[in-house]
Picture 1 (cartoon, one colour):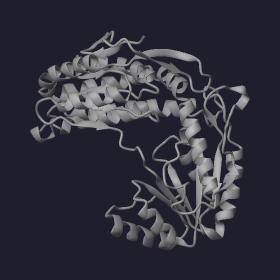
Picture 2 (cartoon, rainbow, N blue to C red; picture 1 turned 90 degrees about the horizontal axis):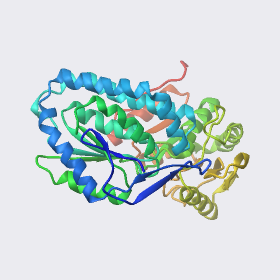
Picture 3 (cartoon, rainbow, N blue to C red; picture 1 turned 60 degrees about the vertical axis):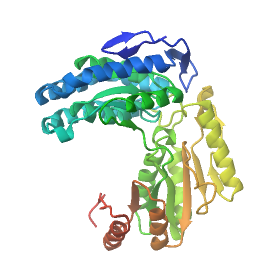
Picture 4 (tube, one colour; picture 1 turned 90 degrees about the vertical axis):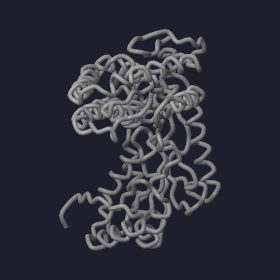
Length: 409
């Protein structure tokens, strides 16, 4: 059973219960991690709390140098970490390499920002709990831990229980920091709950940061004048990355009715060329879902959407590409989905494209704003229309839109 990182040392957990981790593509066992309980959480939080006074008063130059060294150590083992991400998460290797690069860059970025966080108002007052999610286990914890460390705070990390092994390998890089600044324990939901309670029970004003994307359904709008080649490629890539298990992926695709059929046909053709299979192979586009339960849940959601009026244009079932026994789900396209029907009421964490026809741009934008997404995309070649939509979105949401023109027209 793997050890946990407490007070700068790899130690055995007090807990005897363990969780087996398997490769979601092949179901091969990868190892076991402890289900840490209250005693292990208390040890980790105590170590972080003991390290806090010294680290909080450390010179900015020291914090910056040590953060930069964490980033360098991650990059030095980048290939090994990425291989383990793919083995335990099912992501294609190219995506895992991107995740490792993003995690390292996060520490490097905050190494630079550490020079500007010196005032007391920017200091962290307690221990921060960083709880990861399975869709991007390295990046989400890095985004919490790096700025806290830069600001003089200390952290207890709990990687996602579905795929914690790569986070434990990455944790070797925390050896660049003084002992106790970052601690790493493992476990499930119960462990996370105990950690949040323990971190909040300390002195000062500690906070607990966890992934906040759960339940998100992002939106994308494709207007009738859009370049379909660009729209199809952009929507398919953003939706199907990590087999559709990215909470920031567009869960609702609003398409003007005049081009809805053509868009669906084009995206069907695009998706049909994607390679589903072993994520360790360089030509694989889509790997498995994270678990058997996840695959069955997506299958049930698709079936319910069809029963509620959606048309199944492609996919819709679990399957075994190349005879692999893992948790694979067919790339799936649902068309003619009605607003507020079963296909749109909850996020589908799988490779499912939900296409909702709309009457015109006004209806599409109204629906997208009603979704209250953190991020949304609009495809159009009408510059004036884009400017009007942007002004309306800013007026309603009080958020300034960003423009990413693909070509000058």
